[in-house]
Image (cartoon, rainbow, N blue to C red; front, side, top):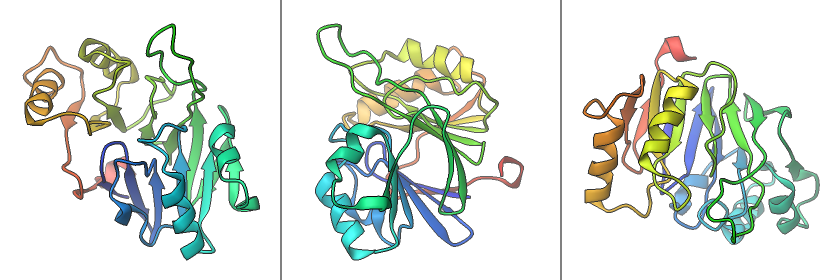
Length: 217
């Protein structure tokens, strides 16, 4: 399984010649969807879901399938059965990858700001993308895609979250609003120089591909 990070929270996963993309939003490079067989969208916020970009990809590829929650599916009206609505507890196969759905709600930003629905996706039982939530999947995983910067989280929360999930490694996502200083600061706390999470921490640069070792497949 080959993971490529694109802008902000977007990840492309390649396995056995097929491509799956999670959260190609408004801060992601458009080429993330090139040659894609399946798309998963965690929730409706612009940095995770770009309707025009996704519709253009669907128009260019009649075989493209999309799995997401009800709110996003409603905005993709007209694509018919190519869009599937999923919720916590659902399982399906997309681009040859077994997917389990975890979580229901976006993390709380502030009590005065309404919450939206958010689903996380566990791929082949090893790689977990939580979207905009600190959902604990409740099963052992190898790789956590960790949202490292958001108005709804603090670095201390992230340390405790990684400890609770217990992955072997954590890759930084959701970092599109950080400058170089912020990236280094967050990495200092989550990496080997911090208080310790029990997981190896790495921030792949956008466009960087990471091959998961055989033991993680």
